[in-house]
Length: 168
Image (tube, rainbow, N blue to C red):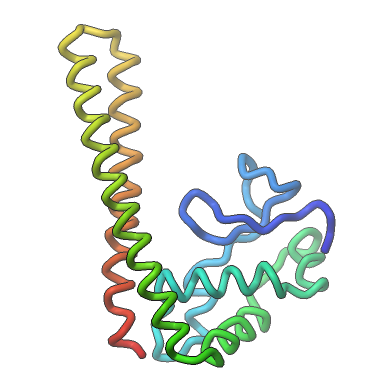
């Protein structure tokens, strides 16, 4: 693998290739659900499926793909197909275990985010009542918006993961 590129999850949980592993820079490539969905046929790529596929890519991306990511501009291709085939070659019980674990993780994350949002809202109300400068209240409101965005993503993922059984 070229020493300058690392595959990491971005803040939205998507696998991305970063130069020098620097997540503050734009990724060289980001794998979306669609990169895998085109190879999955009628089966939906849910969060648990995506997690498996992303992990598989991290472990099995061929050297040519690493160089392509870093120098030529990578495009989704055969490696994603291979990842999907690896997923479908596993016993169904392993799929079910991954699905149940992902659903539990998503539910726990949602609970934590809801609690954090409540705490931020309470802090924001306190700042407003204490007549703090607008910069503080604006910052608190931005934190609340960021948490709400993450809650929306998690809730969408929970819906998708709950629908997993209808596809398999």
